[in-house]
Length: 601
Ligand SMILES: [Zn+2]
Image (tube, rainbow, N blue to C red; front, side):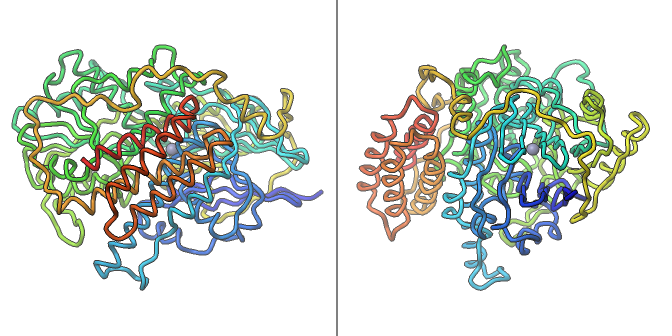
């Protein structure tokens, strides 16, 4: 009998870079294609040749949209991968936003490295480009939750809710050669926004994440988010501002919800302006709004909750964004990335860290080697663009925002599986965390547990294979149609955040000359993100909107673009996309394009 093998190509010995290769006779499947982040020795692996030719991979299955699970996809596509990328609807939408942002950042970083002369390559190279991302997003194929989905030749997958971020799933893969369950990242039992995770069908082989495998989340003693509320109160009282690094998709929404509740309860000052500085959050908010129609949100959550936040200002303008660093009035700024590995949060940190009145509140897991981790560990100076700044601001962590299961949650997930696994592979954790969790599984559940090494290969046998239970859905198109909301809800609010001017937070008049380049760059990001949403338009609209957006992007990227022509191009594209505003793609594109005039001023 031909064997099935599993090779751990990432998230083994580290938290990032999730990639698991499943080899079957005549079939090669990759589960997740994450980017390595954090420590340099791992990040360098992003640049190494992929261990197998990407063109030899038949298909990819994606558990969720975090970059450490999907961020390497465009590199595989550039190097020859052409197959389908199976994932849930929410993952397809969020991943296209994440990847566009990543492609843009890669290009930017290469450009800075070139200009700053600190690149090892000459010319400096991006890991991949926006053009590579554009070839990637059309490969997403939607798979419904909780139904066995046929991949052909006796292979089926089932996606089960993982309760981690919107669209996140555990994946059970069934083949004639054996069956294996991938936990993906698992959420806590009580996610503030999403419906709780489900229990997938058991398999003899189970991979389980162990991000928090060595710890328990503290029981919320007394008031929720008191660490954050207290930090906000004392920072504002001493005349400082609060910076909250948060991932643009998922975390920003949850932080906003918490801040709103704190304000309504009178636990933080009511009149403090809150700024969301992330153009990506706009597109992500649109995805959350439609999610209600697909039953992914908790019953007590209204999508309007994400839009009706008083005193909230969204910043898409690069100059406003810089002015925030020296506000004439204390404020709260939410900006990405969440681990301060890149993005706009860096210039906020650079400007705000040297002032001891300010405060930085981290809201999630901070990987080894990231700026976030260094700050939490008490680093006294930090390097930005080749220059050191002192760290005098207060650094706080609010652990209650975690969207990862803790050790007990992980044990519960394993215990609920039926049948129980024969072998458990503990992945996606730093060494201490994975080892501690493996010991716990051995002691409490009596199972065979392994912490695999990077690139370790194991053989799986057909013994105890999970057989698909429910009727198997065939073909991607039907399933995709089944997963889409039958009738899109009418849009209850304008597709942008309310711009409530806040007392005392006036921005000085902008100096057009020195903001021009940044604004143009900002518009390019918005257009690239919009292009990533094209596959979510009805097919008959895709070519027209895509062409208009590309034309516009070409215009924006040219030498001293004519702003009048840009406005006109935006109007044309808006008009075309508005014709499909009842679809998720149309909504996102309209929401994004509506910001361009604001950036142009
Ligand atoms: Zn994740």
